[in-house]
Image 1 (cartoon, rainbow, N blue to C red):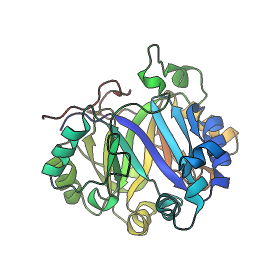
Image 2 (cartoon, rainbow, N blue to C red):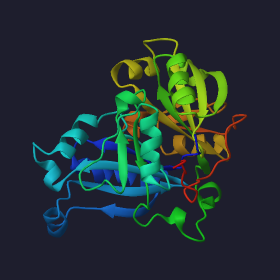
Image 3 (cartoon, rainbow, N blue to C red):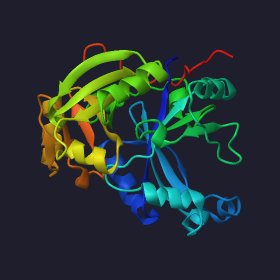
Image 4 (cartoon, helix red, strand yellow):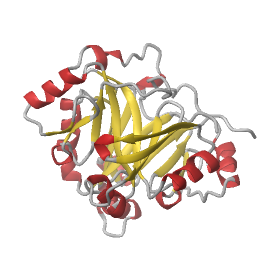
Length: 311
């Protein structure tokens, strides 16, 4: 499979009134930078806008919390209903991956047995693969550019997150998925999607068996819990799919001290991975680590290199 650059990670908010606090948390704690904010105005609502969202960058990684708004607030709105059903602690909408040619990507995924969905009017921009087909991870395959995406502009440099921000974020190391078995993960990611395998190991902070796959500019970590009553085991039973993301930081001890000094409750440990408890982090589990993992791809986005597929 060609390397698929990660365009963004998104999640849903149950109520648009929650969005300002959610955005403020990431702007403050992670030093997120706003690329674009989509809001409902009389003009955009007349055009059918059904949600509000802020496109935020933490280093090279775009994060998008999305809430129903405008026409999406109507009880019978398909998008609004989907967002409300998808909201909650530990629940993510999924990933968006950038390709050069959408029809070629369509043919490639269909040849591997995936059912694709196109939102009306968006046929030239993206298609979706439902969560049930990807072990709980919703996949959007997009072409073109996200609004005001600085990663595609000359002079883009995410280094300030590593050098100037107290957390010292160097880049996105991995996306964690709760999976029922490593065999299921291998069959999907290695066999159907042709993602290179990066080896298996035990991840102590989750007490999970892990099988990693190279997505291109980040890694999918398929995590199978050993204890069904653990945090990861409950996520698998109640949600399944994306459970966490992992940022590599310059100095784990300094990042820990900074967050603890601000009064956040932390889980994990400096030697491995640690995170703010999700209840204090807008329902997101975001691990920080000072460790490289042998075989993982270099940190940094490949958004300027959209995936190409044979015609």
